[in-house]
Image (cartoon, rainbow over all chains, first blue to last red; front, top):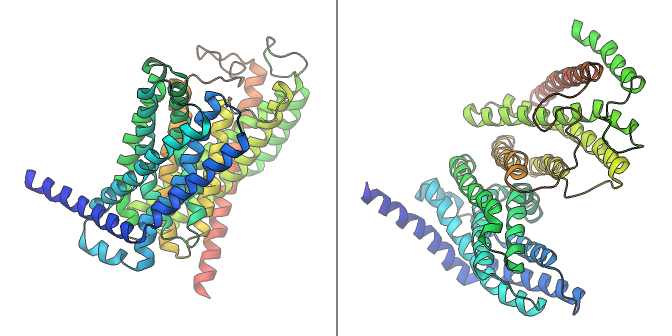
Length: 227
Length: 225
């Protein structure tokens, strides 16, 4: 049914566009994420001084900054709906899965913006750039996709809770732990200048993780959304 | 009822035997740390019970999402609560063992320590979520969804990560089974370990049954008054 799938894509994009428009008006999530990333980058860079850390440490620091910056903004997509009281209208107007993918797409755009901003700053402040850009960017792209994919449903869960900000990080970390272990390994190889042969194992893990997490989230999303 | 009475002499015998019989270590291992290997009789069953509780909690979480009976949620949270206790015990005993044999309480390159710590974090996060959701139906559904997400992550950590990713592990697995899967422990060790595993499991099931019953009564008195 090509007609139906076009309809679905249009609905998903409509949800994303709606979020983008309200984000452009308030700039709440972007401001939170970017400022958080800037502050942590500055704190770490200042405390390191002129010291050039090892690639292991650099990879770990990079993902710590990205993880916590992402945590400060990714939950907004659903919290915003709860706070403005528009969740009910959204429930009535669109099927659950289109909302899930619409929000997922918005979070993906948010994280991509963050990554585009953070990588040049990282290179400038830490005086070192990846020796193998292809490996580094592959890890970054898959890591960002996995971060958005695994946390979108958690954002929907947290939006219903009474303490939102801290809870989102607490719930996301155990779910993201396998992803973080794999992406730190890939970034390390990318910074040090190794090839794709050195990252085949974490790359497989990362792809499998992304596919499984998004599939499971799709299956479970209605239970969260209809509550 | 009879097996509950049986549990006392069996567990008593396990405790005495664990300390009176020769240490279960294989002779090739670290010198001077022989006695600390006795912790194996208690540490492994604790880790097993923590995992079993996690699986039971998961099972009832999935069943709650299927038929929305509050009793399934009650069973899931009760299993998780007991699982947390055994998980803490397993983490502490494992950490003591690590300190005595490898010189440090914690080592992140040891994948078993990573996985049990993540399990501990999962239990903590699960209860943090529950306490933040006041409405019982919402709490039951959302924590059930969350526990399935945790389980997927745990599967990656426990089964996939150590196999496809070269992780360094000093965990003494060759005192029970060697690299080819052959059982290497002696007959007396196997008997004590088997009895310990059995009695820890039984103790857990007993505690679980009691906790479920008291939780049901608490629920009933709350809704009745």
